[in-house]
Figure 1: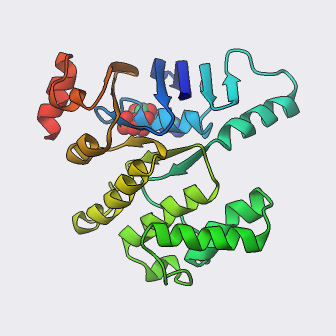
Figure 2: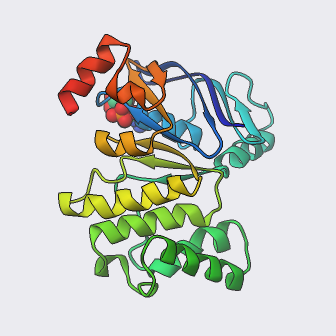
Length: 250
Ligand code: ADP
């Protein structure tokens, strides 16, 4: 079943057009890897799905929530509601974790569910403890971010995104800010989540990891999806520009 649909997404910053009509779909329970040269628009795509950026045109649907950016409701409240409903469908994991420094690991996980979603504290706490265990941090619930390694902080970041119970997890180069020896533990968590059937869109330069997890690969170039396919895109690309890119990063 198709969970995520993006159609004709365009986005400019000033006079720089970054996305020029991005089209793709992602099936529920699959991992999609977005690859491409720096500046090709990968982050902007994830941010558009989560409406951290508002596309200039195009349509996005995740599950039952859809926004047509060519035809937004005129009424401000209706527009806000529509966008909030779409935003609630995805959870974002950033390059650097953006944790609240003055809150414990558990506190970081409770903020969204309790403050934003209004869930009961007891129930949210039980879920949050389970999620911390899920990312290998049982026993570290009361640690503050400064007491955790970069890899542990990023795993809290992943658990925090999951705590909002999104339909799809968006990971924007989740290991690029980490020291090399900490990359493995974070990728292992992402691999586990993929094996568990989480729907994920992942921007990464870790091609070997991408080969392991990708059900679908989108190669971005010049603001469009230049090649789309299964994991074979990483080993046997059809397009010359994909081939050139892979030969540079491998
Ligand atoms: P990628 O993730 O593929 O490296 P990005 O989506 O981060 O690409 O960025 C694509 C281009 O858009 C870059 O040239 C970047 O400088 C520009 N860009 C991204 N976000 C903004 C912004 N908020 N304001 C201005 N320019 C931006």
